[in-house]
Image (cartoon, rainbow, N blue to C red; front, side):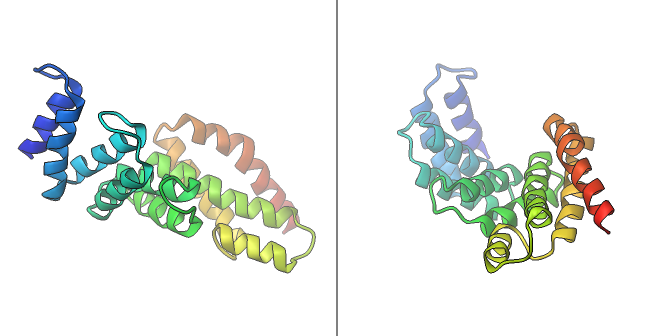
Length: 188
């Protein structure tokens, strides 16, 4: 979209004098026309206060519009907002939903984040003594009620991210998931 491209030129100073506020105005026009890339860029600008005041709520709302339009980077950013409570109340289920959508499109960061979430559930359950109501509540609040499936999902997502070149995923797979898998096999 030409409005988005013009906004990017002003925002970044490509071929013209840099003017982030003018860039934001053009991005806003493009975003209102449904341009998912412009919506994501507005979200980033509001989150970081670049060309505007920091406004996490508005940044999160633009990520949400862009994510619904199919922008996978915005889906990851929206998931992070939900996970950390940035611009909204923390909501692990919403975070997992958006990470899963982006991971289904082979986004390495989404795959790595899911691996961490799923492995946290599996590790918590395998290390708990018994299955108290508190443990079950913690588990449901995290990801799911199936730690074996969660460990399998963690390994799958982490392997895909590592294969795509995500260095942190490769390290996490080696240092965190491999010992969990060995422990699970020893129990079975």
